Length: 354
Image (cartoon, rainbow, N blue to C red; front, top):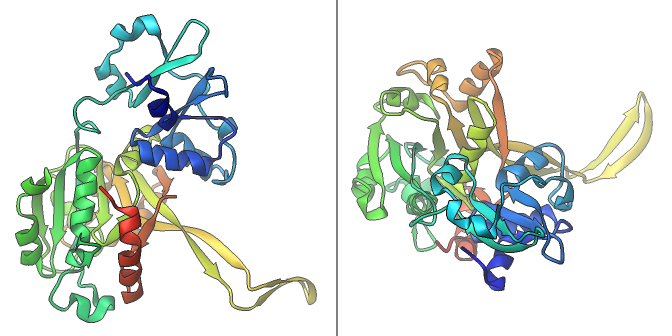
């Protein structure tokens, strides 16, 4: 159990702190949650990564304070009950940290739910789409598949695999096509990354999700699908937990995209001008190339036909199945163009230190 002031500070926050500050704390403590206390140390509640994502989707800004979004009825234990804590129950209920209080409800310690590895082993599969040709990167991908381009001091795909392993994932399926042997030679069976890696090779282009139909006999639980050219600071476990707790058949990881209009934009009423906005910026939520799917989604995907993720999303909406969005507020970069590749290399050392 954590009792020292220094360690407790990493896992606690005041209700007056902002969502942004708490996201940084959660990212650093690698526990997925914080305990909320007042300045005297009186327990007020807990705040999870999921609480934050739901608040953002509900319209909260990352500059807003957390005082209205944390859980004010947390699971807690008194000091004399520590021996009664069941790690199995905590993991079953997806509770990562538990506040320990004295009789007056003041925080005296925090019990974490992990045993051994920083994150418990996750059986759910992760499908990584690594078959694209990367035409927009020109000569960079002439002889090298895009996921094997070196960013920082290692291939993009290696960074993805190492982060997945760190957060507890073990079972990886790589969907390959272009220069597939290079990827298989580099990754092997995954054992050097602490992973179990298997492969599905597309013989013809099947789109951004079509190949996944051929994996339905391998996958028994909700699974992640992600592009193999992404750099993100996201804790991948958080999007899976969010999916499992929000009753959708698919969750789309979404990020912010800001478009700046290089002109003065007129707001009009008929022929009358009401005001002019000088070079305004508009922010949209766009798909971030990271998804969680239930097996039910595979029923919509035709076998051995070209099929994009947007086709699947359209089908889910047509059939009025629940589709959720998970906001990615952490660093995110799709390496699609030469300028993106340069930016990734500039950003890497400050962001990916696992």
